[in-house]
Image (tube, rainbow, N blue to C red; front, side):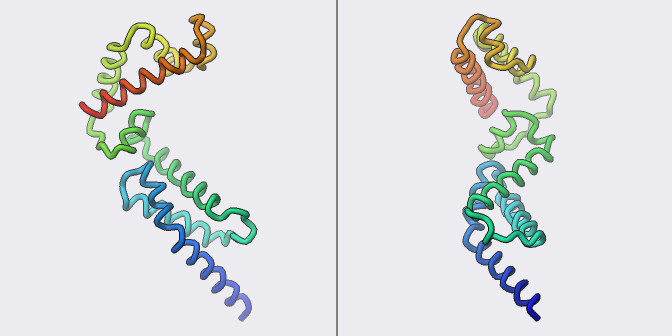
Length: 169
C-alpha cells in the first residue's frame, strides 16, 4: 500500500508542475516552432518522459530551469528530425516567423545564390568563406587582413539581406 501512496504523491507532484508550467513552456516552444499543436505535443512529451522516468523534482534545485531546458532540447530534436523543413539558418528563421516554406530545395538554392551574388564583393567573399568553406571568423580575418569584428559585421549584413529577401519573395 505504501508503494501506491508514493506513486500517487509523485503523480500529484507532476500534475501540479504540469499545470503551473504548461502554458509558459508551450509559449517557449511556439517561438521556435510556430504550430501550437506541435508545441503542445512537445511539452506533453517532456512531461510524459519525466513521469515515466520518475524524475524527482525535490532533488532538482530549479524545476523551472530543468523543464525549460528539457523542452528546449526536445524542440531542437524535433527541428533536427524535420530536416526537410529545417536544413539551415534561413529555414529556421522562416519557421520562427510562421512563413510556410513552399520552395523546392533547388529553387531555394538558386534564390540564395542570386541574393548572395547581389551582395557587395567583399561581403560575398566573407560569407562564402564562412558558409561554404566552413572557415572560422578568425581564419577569415587573418586570411583577408581584416578584424574579426569586420567579419562578424559582414556575415551579419549578408544574413540580414538573405533573411529579408527570402521572407518577402
